Every structure is written in C-alpha cells, then in structure tokens.
Image 1 (tube, helix red, strand yellow):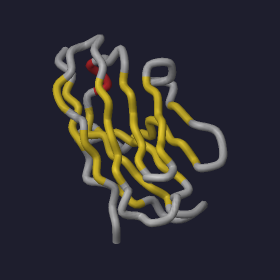
Image 2 (cartoon, rainbow, N blue to C red):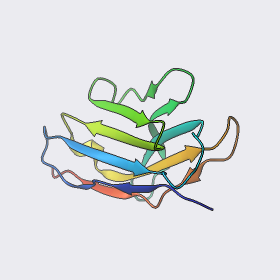
Image 3 (cartoon, rainbow, N blue to C red):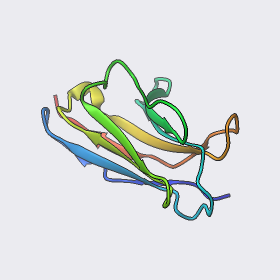
Image 4 (cartoon, one colour):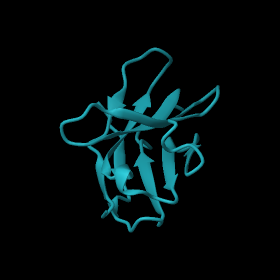
Length: 117
C-alpha cells in the first residue's frame, strides 16, 4: 500500500514559520482527501486541517488564522504552512490521504515539529 511521506519538520522558534510537505505522488489517481493531524506523546491525535477534493477546507480553532493548508491535485501533494508558531504547536505532524469518500485514512509516519518554550 502506498503511504504518504511527510517532510519539513524541525526546530522553529516561537513566532516563526515552517512549511510541511506531504507527498503521495505515487498514487496514480487524484485522491479525495488530504489532511494533517498532530500528536503529542500520551495524547490523542488532533485534526489540524484538511482539504477534500470537493468541499470546504477545515481548520481547528487552535490553528485557524495561523496555518494554511494547500494541495496540488495533479501530484497528490499537500502542504501545511505554519505561521506565528507557538510552543503548543510542538508535536508530530502526520499527513493522511483518503482515496475516496468514506475510505479509511492512510497515514504517513509523521514529521516532528519542535518549538521551544
């Protein structure tokens, strides 16, 4: 099974910016959904943002106005532009793809974002 591959994580200072990438280009048809969750050790995964092929983008209250999700449908890639980053944004960020509506999510392995407090 083809899984998305995340990149772009790292150390970012509070107030700084970071751009995460999700590559699912090995999938040969345009997937229905792509999005980002994040997870802190010991906590549940939190949906950060998603972008369905047809529909409205979603942002969690905690990132709305600071993060922007985008996607390249032709290449099945998605991006998460993170601005005005806060220490609470530190987490492993996981990308997912959803091949068709209502299908199970296919997860990447994640990329770590570190924000010192």
